[in-house]
Length: 201
Image 1 (tube, rainbow, N blue to C red):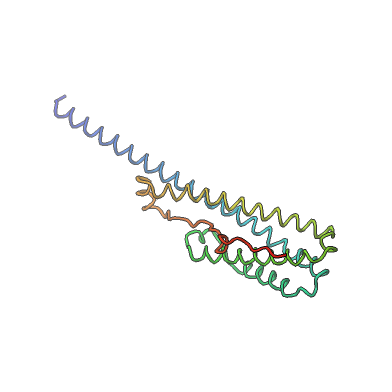
Image 2 (cartoon, rainbow, N blue to C red):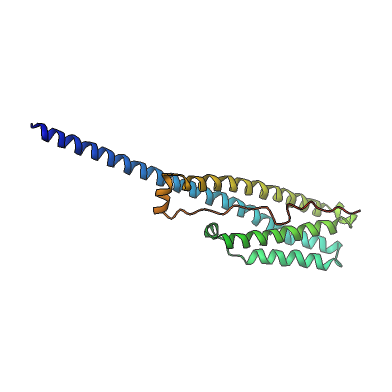
């Protein structure tokens, strides 16, 4: 075999090996991005699951309170309306790619949280209600759900951070650009979260 043929075969072999390595890296990177994207969707489902649990508990809570605090209609209506706003939202994993839609979702959930907080303040006026076993069970479930929502939002933000970091890092950003991998939105603190609450006695 001629020396030039051996050199050509060696060069072709090196080129094929390099091409195979690049393709393998590309496939591996793409698959890892898909895994991270699915992780974000899974974490999002858990957040929605906890919000749904709260959404389902609210009618029972309102009905229980209504029996004791019928004249607190404004607060009860506020909770019902805030729940209705949340219920009207069409929420799918696509919302994670639309910062404005995500912000509307956050605002609706924040409005519901605020309405529930006002309801809990009203409840403090009714010692008989606070002693009612049905109410105590509902309140306990609702408090547990609020804690779960907080935990799931934190987990979601952690998964989103991993995903967003990965798609922005070079050379994975190159593969992310060819796929439909775009940054996902984070849950943010509510607008008034920086202001200390005023306590009046």
